[in-house]
Image (cartoon, rainbow, N blue to C red; front, top):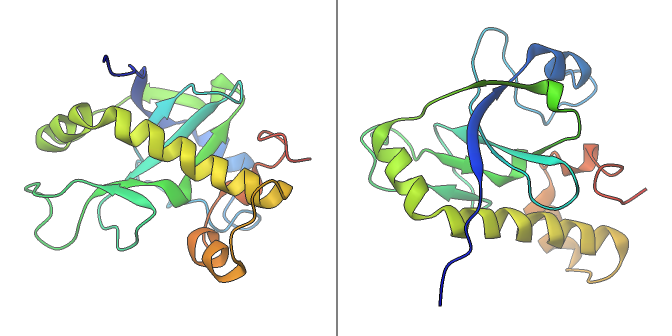
Length: 159
C-alpha cells in the first residue's frame, strides 16, 4: 500500500495579508511587527491554500509537535492547527523559507500525518458549524476557542 503524497512548501506571507487581516479585526491571527512567520502551505481542497504556522512553543493538542528537537529546551516547537489561515489570493504568498534541519527531518517523515490532521481539523470545524456532525459544546469550544477558522467561513463554503 503506498502513502499519499502531499505537495507542500514552507513560505512566509506578504505584509499585505497581515494588513488585510489586521490584529484589531482578527485578533486570533498571529502577527507581530518585524517578526517573520513561517508557514507550511498546502493546496488541499477548498480551491485555496491552507497555511499553518510554525510555532516555537505550543502547549495545546491542536498541533503537530516536533518532539526531540534541539530548539525544544524551553518548550515544544511544531505546527499550530488552531492558527490555520485559508488563502485564496496567491499574491499573499511570500518568499520561500527554511526551518531547522531536525524539524525539517521530522516534517518530511510525518507529512502525510500533518496534512491529514490539518484536513481533519478543518473538516471537524466545518461539520460542526454546518450541523452535519455536531460535537459537544464544551468539546467544540475547547478545540476551536482560539481558532482562526472563524474568519474564513466564506472560503470554506460556510456562508
